[in-house]
Length: 273
Ligand code: HH2
Image 1 (tube, helix red, strand yellow):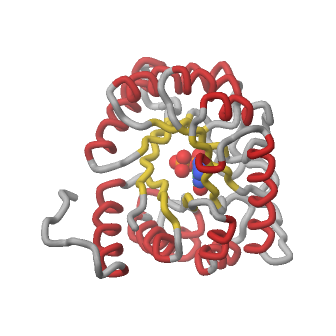
Image 2: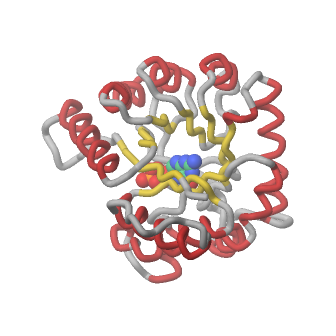
């Protein structure tokens, strides 16, 4: 069983560029094309940072950032996911050709988003988060992090189904770094397989996240080795979609990991990494 690789395409303003919006979009489109060429199966386009402490972006601004990028990448034939919690942004992206909605609030921020996903019959990622991005890292407490995340996701699956989303379209995600201490993140890696009991495939996003920095001292742009270790372990423990910044090295790591784990994999004709 292989995993899908979701390449991260952030469309955020570059304070060092005086080219304005056009350049931001052009750069994101070029980046998306590069990630697809490196082997990304899905391109996850996002216009709002959800980093701890990040400020919310108004819908109009998020729409302005993401829309040209979703349109260009979908029109070029790539599978596009929209990383948003907002109806206006998701709806426009779906109309422009996106086929997946990746909502870090699991349809809680704007519950009407569920009906839109049902109507468009798109894939939906339901992610766990404790609190919201401004406050989530203050003092996250769980009874048992895996049991609590699992119960939350079970409830969100029920909600999505009640809103008419086809069960086959649903992905679940433990939300690494979203209201979790280092220890919580590690426990979720170790016991990821328990989430598979919910009967839906697991998406996983740990690329360059701060727990890797806390474990190794590495700055955010120096966390490739830690990101690969984390994703390979997630894959071995049941993840079937990996959301990453560095697609080419992750593709290579995954090709080796999956061949080791599954002796029936045909490795005699290597896939270009
Ligand atoms: N993490 C981020 C954003 N979206 N979606 C899913 N399904 N799972 C994740 O773990 C996840 C996500 C983190 O976003 P941010 O901190 O803004 O940075 P980046 O988009 O560069 O990862």
